[in-house]
Length: 485
Image (cartoon, rainbow, N blue to C red; front, side, top):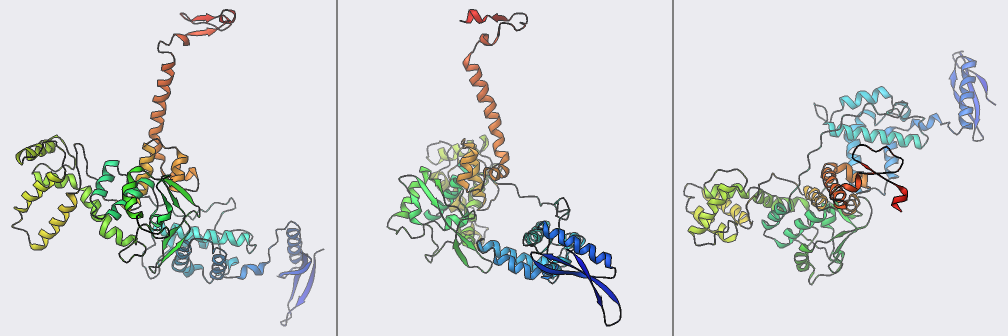
């Protein structure tokens, strides 16, 4: 039973300390001037102990920085990149304000003010909305963990209902970029390296993340079953090191291998050990994203994405970025004038003619300009264009993942199939990420159901019949149950 003890200080003042038992141990409250306040506090603590809700106030003396270190040490199973990002975010945005503050001293008002005024280290302006949002999420997770570890009774970053009113607005996400099959083929055609072209086509048709693609081994490819096993991924740390570990979701999965990839993959598999990397850098080690993006992917996207405009410039017709009837007529004329079959298809032979003519018009260019134009036209000349082809804006390597999702959905794949291919943790994430792409399914579903309904009875007569006992409108027959038998 709770009780109080009288304490006298050296200065002659008197105070009272409440005494109570929790988990069989005798504990004390802080000192109070009034005996009734100390007793009330001791009784509240004792009742909380009986309900399993009592928390030792001294547990909240640990600083936020010390608790962060302890919290991260218990998350060693997380991806190294995730842990590294958390450390950077805590060090630069959270620690300057709360690092040396004891957990129990973190106040809701302090969190709210910090979320609004947060600044990067050494910076004069506020941090970006995305950085502020990530930092608030980190602090909320850190304090939630302190509640779970019984170091705090409640999370000071949350309201009593559990909301986080200080959470900055979500930044507007960049719209997804999707390529059509024809545009994806153009990008791969613009790449001179067979390995690089195969990698881009693989990413654009299977949706593998860069870390997963670069970690593929020869033994992961099964041409007979037409499957690729995705079991590991490379993670690049801020210091440039590559770490080989599990995939983002720590799950092993298989993705379908489109038949169009077989020739390119066969060349990469031949003569290589099963444990060897499928795609390698110049030194034989893992292929680095930044190097591949700079020297292979971006030049190919630039060439393929502006191929129609380049063609129109060489032909001297209005540059619209679309291979329209005016451009098509000019292609026909050029092909006929140079002894080519006037098919209208801009193939290698047609590009050769156009590039040869262009070389005669470079007198005013410097040597550097001539070299740059030669290289660009060499990449464009590997692309085949047909009527209706359109140019497209630049895109990133990750947009190939979005492209794969788009092409799969357009091909009739279910949400579950797309989820498994992309390695999402749940179909809900797939729907949330690509909800707009599934809107067309509603149109197709409506048309399909209408067609099936009509096909069952083209005249519609069978549906103008009611069973006996129902009121029949004018012109509608009543079907007797006896007559039906």
